Length: 116
Image (cartoon, rainbow, N blue to C red):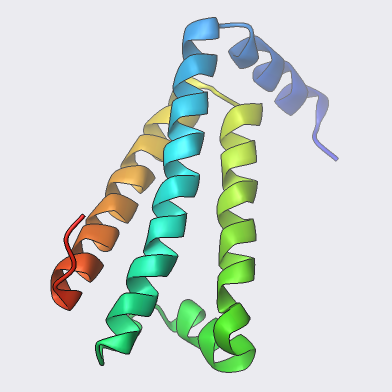
């Protein structure tokens, strides 16, 4: 249950429509980049590469093709958090994380020979 302070910070951030618009954009990019990360990871694995993230590798070995479900839920959950607290700090963090995901996706597609 969020504290009263967290609720006030979130409500104040949501009152700024400019921040809300950026939050919507960054949340959408986060979910799309996460989905493309799943696609590009599967392509890289099919091309003979290995998973570099030990947590994702553990999900893949224990869940098989269903490993993408918790990863997708994670991305959707974080997108909801971005939308719930669209503060400047949250948006800056989301932008940096999105850049990292885009770089990972581009690298995965590059190593498999795919082009977007």
